[in-house]
Amino acid sequence: MSPLADTLAATLGTTARQFHELVDDHADVPWRDFLLAWGELREADILQRDNDGNYYIGEPTGEG
Image (cartoon, rainbow, N blue to C red; front, side, top):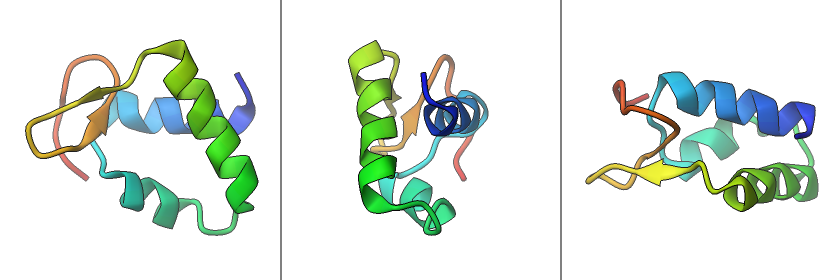
């Protein structure tokens, strides 16, 4: 995975987040690069969603 995808995965491994929160956290990253990294996570089939629509990886541990 790309470094950005690894960063997103690390975040979602510790805190459930809404997609827009992840976008806001990485506002300095070009949109195309962000979407490519997000696509890597989707292709890896590791993303899960809680009842509030937050994304997480592994066990849900809280919301951002």
